Image (cartoon, rainbow, N blue to C red; front, side, top):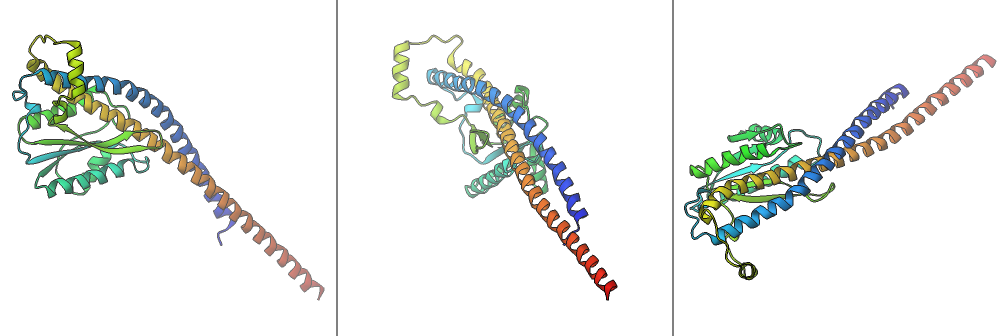
Length: 296
């Protein structure tokens, strides 16, 4: 059995760790509130951008001259996992990478080559450890991404797609549902989804009620300018979703760690009391035995 001093030392160590996890939980909660405000403000803008792209695409006579909307035989696909720069966030990084590797196996099963572009130090280190060749990597902004960070990723993806080095781009990230729930999603951002170009009956009725729009310049030229912005917007939304999910996962993980530390302290305190009682009992027995020896 461990001595009272050893158990007491362990209790102090666990208590200090609990203070750290509690502080990290509070920091993550504060960052989560800010991230929630940003993503809730971003979602309506991204939805309106999607509607604008769809309406302009329906008005255009042809989209063949727009490189990012060109559909061709797929030979190479790019996977872009959005991970964090730090750990201590529960399954946040692991579940993204597991889904990304599963997607890789699926794409290779379809006969496609796979190229990796990754955001976040955790994703980059995992891919490097597994000896994957990384086409591009970004880091340093997983907590608070800026629009410029999304632009950097979008420009690189657009460049690779326009140069026909990749024919498909799938982003893998955590979609923020709540502080307790983050759902991993796969979003194909290039080429632009075909359903954006389809006209439903409801959209036809809405267009009829509004009347015909006069585009200046031509819809094709407007669309060519909008598509890169749409790509940046979708990536920025994904980065914000990922940032909120990371803070939610970290807050939950640190809360569980603090709870576990409290339970461990209770267990160690009980063990220390038993060890102290055993020492006192042993000392009493030794005193009694010594007194018996003197009286004989």
